[in-house]
Image (cartoon, rainbow, N blue to C red; front, side, top):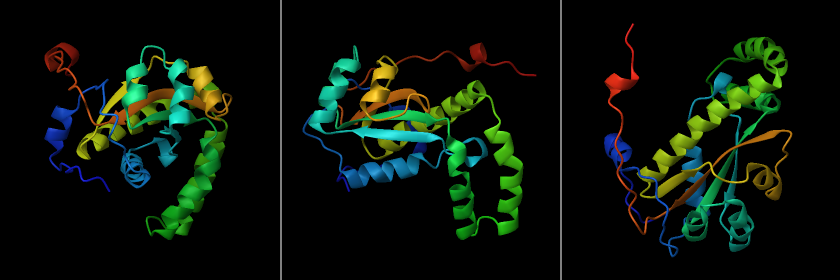
Length: 212
């Protein structure tokens, strides 16, 4: 567990999150704490609780060297961060349905008959979804878990940067994911800021919201 003081004030977490591009390269997040942060991040919601997110934690020097030429203009984040999290959406998420619902029964969240009803109702529907509809669904769900991971990281005292500018196809293949199954979503660098991220303005809610 990191000695960094975790913050519990949610507004402080929200307001202190910045996109950080330069990290202290001496700070290394343990596998134990990274696992804990992923467990907390995956409390995020997903469609029918299918949890279609899949991750690659890129932390070793060898893995970072493999990622570096594929990350285009984001080399600082790759080189100085403790790790880079590659987030994917799994188009074959329905394969995990029985495991997910069975665990719900085991934990007492639902009776067996409810699981059976949900499996009977959802599996044919989800299995028959067109690929583009599945892709849209996993992109939404993976976006939710990605944002939650960044907030969890801030609560643990770390900084992050979401990265969309990278060679998605080559990263998918380089780290052993199936391009026919796994949809690349984003990279998220994580570590302790060496340079603070810039504050940025936001459009007024009145400019972006309609009330009906």
